[in-house]
Image (cartoon, rainbow over all chains, first blue to last red):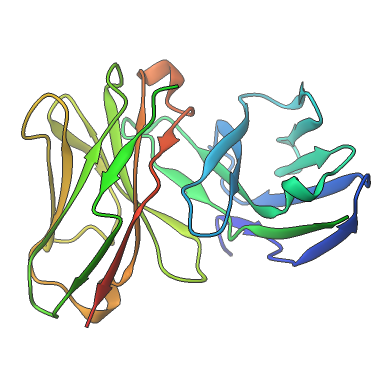
Length: 112
Length: 115
């Protein structure tokens, strides 16, 4: 079983739609949960970070963590064509070296 | 806004040659990382570096790889004898402190092609 599972998509939605992106993980020791956005041939850009179970909102983005189910989600409201990118979930635990494990990334296309 | 920079943006080398990838982390950051992303695959952790020593490394980071902070601003990744399978995008990242390790800021990457 992979440590982090993420559907690679692609996911295509019309402009204005609510987008739901998800990851599951197997290691219950993970403490930190992140979502990165990566445009083609660019470095990952941190979007959201959460430490505990629950929801965290930032503008049009909401990150959700359910540690009991080992399931994390990112919701994008009122999606825009500029949101078209690959979204990477990532997680880590304090091992002293802060190794971060990434999901495979979901490619999102928002059509105007 | 401060950012992580990497040079070169592209590097082409022959198999067996040594390459050095350079990074300038954000100036007040203390933790430094290298990741790689083979084309079409996920981002993979290579190594983390703090207080002038490696704090963690992955199984990918074998004896062919080394990292160094030669001065107060640069952070380098050296691959001693490149293999075809080292062709990938290499990302440097940095973070401020241990309490904020999750906020790693990534550079734009160096695309390495080994022929």
